[in-house]
Amino acid sequence: MSRTTLAAYLDANATADLTAVVTRIADCCAAIQEQLRLGDLAGVLGSAGADNVQGETQKKLDVIANDMLKDALQACPQVRGIASEEEDSVVAANTAGHFLVTYDPLDGSSNIDINSMVGTIFSILPAQSDGELSEAEFLQPGRKQSAAGYVLYGPSVMLVLTTGKGVSMFTFEPGSRQFLQTVSNVSIDRDTREFAVNMSNQRFWASPMQEYVRDLLSGSDGPRGKNFNMRWVAAMVAEVHRIINRGGIFMYPYDNRDPSKPGKLRLMYEGNPMSMLIEQAGGKASTAYAPIMEVTPTDIHQRVSVVMGSADEVDTAMAYHKK
Ligand code: AHG
Ligand code: MN
Ligand code: MN
Image 1 (cartoon, protein in one colour):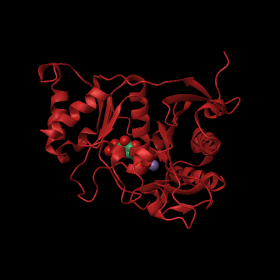
Image 2 (cartoon, protein in one colour):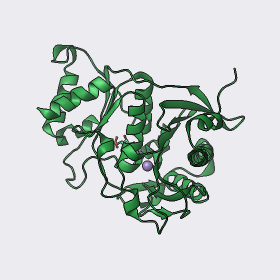
Image 3 (spheres, protein in one colour):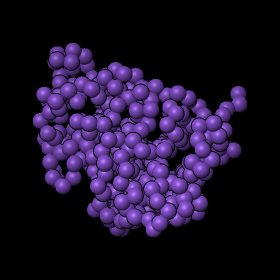
Image 4 (cartoon, protein in one colour):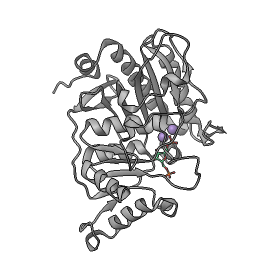
């Protein structure tokens, strides 16, 4: 069976400029997966011995993947600037480029040393000027995204992409080094019986979230009248991939461990791109109070609380917060 290549898909679903950017990212992720696959043989596991700007310990592969993407995107004429979870500030690329790219080079990096799932998440925004690059230019709500996606480095390597015309999935074919379309028009079930949240943080959540999860846990004996299953891969990219494939709700809610951080996940590298994918597949993505993609960022590294997945379940979670 002949499958649609990523190039053919982009030809039909993106401008030439946007195609160039997505193609660079996909090619770079194909190179990143080779490093991941070699693991200890390439000496790439373990800590890099430094912290990122957000005070998190960087893994060697966080740094390697970040540098690979930075180099690839700086060499792409259509890219004006980049912002990365692993960079302190925005990085200029080509002044006349029409796009800004923000990314999480390696999501779920605590999974690297246990040979478990990780991924790369990216968001593509329109450039705002052709003068000197500034951080202010990046501070656009997620609704403005031109495209978003992730590459999941799992048993197979998959690209999940939206250019605003639905969501498609591509599987990396190592022989041809191509991403081939394996699923089109992804649609997330409205209802679910599966949730994902780090329960160890329960005591730090706000009371509406505590109440909502308590009712999930009480199953068929509680007000929800049905039993729920739970999963936690500790990599948002893998949780979202599961939800895209079989529904579910993923939450990293606000907690009061550090009042300066409204949640753990980052709006511009994780929240917005995943929200665009989820919404394009018919799901919902909320802060628990409002759509994530309506938040106007004030800082490239800002955090956001996340409740996303099957539409009816996200509505239910939001209803607890409106009481
Ligand atoms: P990153 O590896 O890019 O820092 O992101 C990890 C994030 C997210 O992917 C995951 O859902 C969450 O952190 C896991 O958090 P816990 O450590 O609370 O499990
Ligand atoms: Mn991440
Ligand atoms: Mn990361």
